[in-house]
Image (cartoon, rainbow, N blue to C red; front, side, top):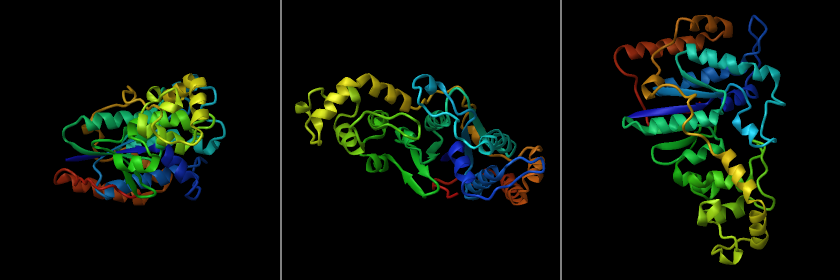
Length: 306
């Protein structure tokens, strides 16, 4: 059975930007994070991955900015980090990896769409969405799990319930109530993680929460005030839920599972090896290519550390 690895390129780029030494190309371009991500994704192949796709936020803004004025933008992103997005996309593509630079949607939408496509393929036994982003927890179930490579933690349906107290399908409703500071929407005043998880574990969806707190058959501190707030700001909660709901039908995701199988680098990769000074990556990918000559690459259902 095939295991598909879907990587959050935006998260990886940010993570490596703050974790690895700076590196400047001969042209004066900062590329430290790009080198780090390239090495990390290459290590996945060394660990046995065969089908890898990387989604990135080619532009930070998306259709969600039209829904909520406070939604995250590119403001505050270091210029030398933002400039590495297009570089990363170009490097990974010529290195032979499937890349989805998201413009209308976000990397989360790309990962969700890729997961839906992969899960529908009978040949696929497991789909690992490689990101710690809580938004993607809503995609977990069946073949699909979430994998935090940095913490080496895999979350299936039980893992999502353990972390958030709700089913994966209730994650958008949960975020609609508690908000998401990373994405720039606040949730409803008074609603916290504990109250939201207790209520949604019972009622699942916003519209199924009884308006009268005396009808709640779960015990929540301050239930009367929470119910009043939900009545007053229901449209806002539903808007936040819509913002938090990832799209699983993005037309920016290209190809099928077969197209996401790594089969070797392109000739253009040689120039990038010199520019980024990554002979170790070139050697690793060359060795991996040689292993493909005798047959399909070895597959694994186990998660792969970065």
